[in-house]
Amino acid sequence: PLWSGAPAHLMTPDDFARRPLRWLEAVSDLRGTHTAAPNLAYELCARAAAGAPDGLDLSSLRAAISGSEPVRWDTVQRFAAAFAPFGLDRRAISPGYGLAENTLKASGSRSGDEPRALWLSATALADRRVVAADPADPDATSVVSCGPADGLTEVTIVDPGTRTRRPDETIGEIWLTGPCAAQGYWQRPAETAQTFEATIAGG
Image 1 (cartoon, helix red, strand yellow):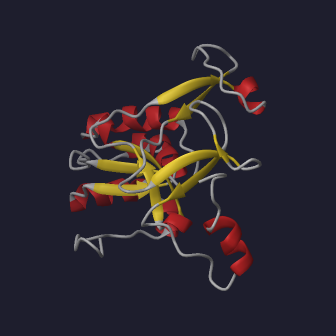
Image 2 (image 1 turned 120 degrees about the vertical axis):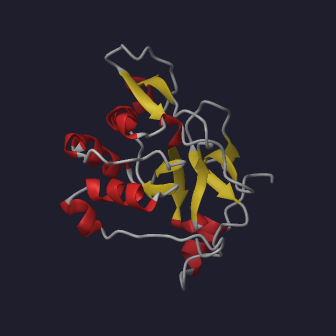
């Protein structure tokens, strides 16, 4: 908002926690187009949906960003179903990934795309392997897509031990670079060198 000159409205965690639907009522009243919160906020609103006022109107929302903690597929599903009668377009739900070291957003699903999940074997994941599973399988767990890298940010999955790129559909550490990356940690040169000056082996 500061960069683009768009108006922004903030809500304190206390105000939200006392009555989660206050957040969606503010979106409705202000005709908000973009909002962001962690998965827990969407979960609490889905649980409280029966108390939503008749006049609630979420049709203005173009992006309801869910990030800052793991995005849960069952929460996405419940939130979408609970607020569809109030004008929420399922395609507005936008799982994303960010971190302070990148001045927040690193990736996010594109506007107009439906949220997506991959179903994997939980047992295999615990063993750091990626094995597709049927959603009906008791061992299946969902992994929600947080979309492609945002803007000029480049995201790579790396084996931190060997500092080499991992192939698609394997597990590793998330490394990124781009113009949004911070310069380092304030007065912490050792941590800055380890985190911000890491390089992939041979590159």
